[in-house]
Amino acid sequence: MDGFPHRLPDTLQRARQACRVSQLELALRLGVSQRHVSFVETGRARPSRDLLTRWLGELDVPLALRNTALLQAGFSPAYRATTLDDPDLAQARAALQQLLNAHEPMPALVLDAQWNLLQLNRGGEWLAATLMAPEALAGSGGAPNLLDMLVHPAGLTRQLLNLRDAGPAFLAQMRAEAALQPELTPKVEAFDALLRQRLNGRPPPAAQPAPQAPLLTVRFATPWGELAFFRMFTTFGTPQDITLASLKVEHMFAADEATTAVVRAQVR
Image 1 (spheres, helix red, strand yellow):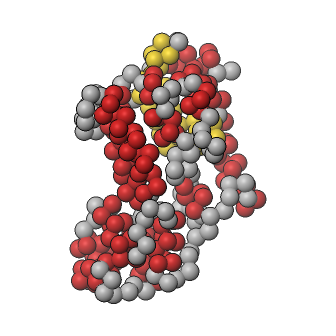
Image 2 (cartoon, rainbow, N blue to C red):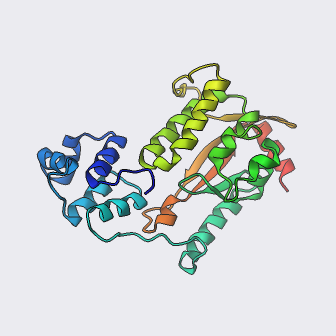
Image 3 (spheres, helix red, strand yellow):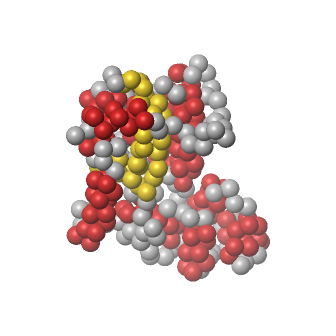
């Protein structure tokens, strides 16, 4: 995996630290001594395939990184990466389309692990066109990327009214993902730089939801007035393919009646 250490000890140590799990806690989960965990992480001991597989599973390491670790240990990879248009994934594609259709007229979109935008429903297409200029949606040759859209001058944050609340919370989420997917780091740092610029200095820590507001909403200025949404994500349960493991469906729900009325009127 690009951006990750090339040595198994470094990979395992970084993965454990990203999950904020101590050597002792991991040792207890695996049923081995803390000393053995330390020896593996320093390269003084080599784990068996069974122990390494359980180790990676306890840390809920992404499937692509599990393959990387297995290869670093001299073992064959355990998971394949099937293209989404492969006939073997026909049921998965149908499930994704069903989720998108069922959420109409509210926006829904399919994203991969790098936050590339793979699919949109009609509500998602309408909201994207409402909030962003066409050049922000075009991407740079490949699939449009949601993180690129955040930092584009004509992108998503241009109309975001509560950037001070939503921005740091999203940045914290992205930093956690980048700890196990270093290829995201440049995009995360670009968003961090945008927050610093827009918020007149270092962004505040991610806000904790107040008791009266259990969900963080995003609020946008639009030609139809302020629209407010909260978000949910759907993923495949226990995926055994790298492609399926990387996919998530983002569902956007109206946070007030005014938003509901506008979306229903505009998305036909």
